[in-house]
Image (cartoon, rainbow, N blue to C red; front, side):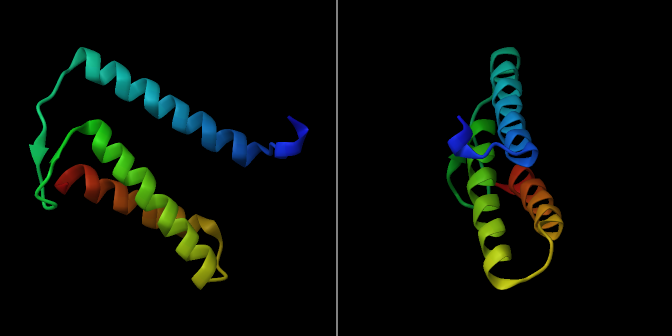
Length: 90
């Protein structure tokens, strides 16, 4: 797998995503939830909100790379605020 250029940040990214999936699976089994309707006016579950957060964070990071020359740490902070908002209001 040398062709993939696995660096520590890349590996850490996929480890975090894998851990999130395991945690959300355990939560879904242990504490089942009913879908709720938020500001988007669609029913969402924890998993749906996680997907929306990951997708939105990808776009935030791409926009950050394309529009600023700043470090990606700033994008991480924006993504954390975005994730908080999604899990709170969506």
